[in-house]
Length: 405
Image (cartoon, rainbow, N blue to C red; front, side, top):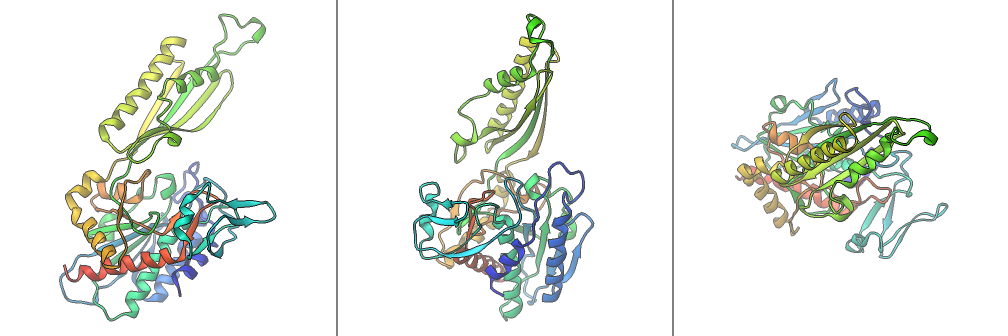
């Protein structure tokens, strides 16, 4: 089966995770895909195939050589983002000749070069797109498809390879993908998540991340007699947000620049709530941002009275560079594999996080490889078939090279 055919099969399964859920995994539909993947891995002949009660799917491809070589792990996640609808996904292949792509004639939805200039990098390639009403799911079903396609190639080849450990995780998109990952049972010396973007991307730096929930307590009274009595919680929330640096938002930052992102807001006169995520690659600047949030909460309480504002912050994950810096040979091996294939490595910081970030701090160094997809978490997400094939080549070369190390 070609990698793109495998991918198209997987995206037919809706697998959106649910941040509001307290179950593990957060949505039952993730298990449906994982059960199908488990059956596929067993049919290919992998060993120790196990789908545990938390929705983690483990498998082992035994070594076919007696040479000493590392046990390498490959990790991808089955869930998709809740940023837009995950069903029904009407995926199709476009033989891209350039220009805008009509995704949905009935609704007049186009993916335009003006909005997405990265399209110009794919002229002459075959792009898998949606009908503009759902995401595609390349994040991260392209990673899943690439890993299983590599396994299929290894099994069909006589070339030597070491032991390969595989895990497909749930709930990565809501920050819980590593919560129940059993590093000891996985048994890899190091691993790669296959969860990045365009072909050649190689990432070992990610944001330090925290979440913040800010609650405001007001006093409601008839507006006709409100003077010196009403405390409008919604106005407090507006005042709080105004105390944060206006230029440090996602829409105005790039590269290594961090941000405060207002994700959700709700309220009335008596009660209001703002939900933020806080991000920065630099640990010191990350801590400064949390101090800015606390100072804003203190200012609101000074203006409107003690107890008017309550701030709760929680760290989510940290920059895996702290760990990978001690294991840079893993990154170098991925770079060498790309260069051998004529693919230019694109080493960039992740403006987000992956399971690999937390796994690195759990004792499993785990940088991130590309999938070939673009515009993740969007109705305009797409995947290049040629790029997906290239990802399979990269992972295969990493595994073969490991025997020679």
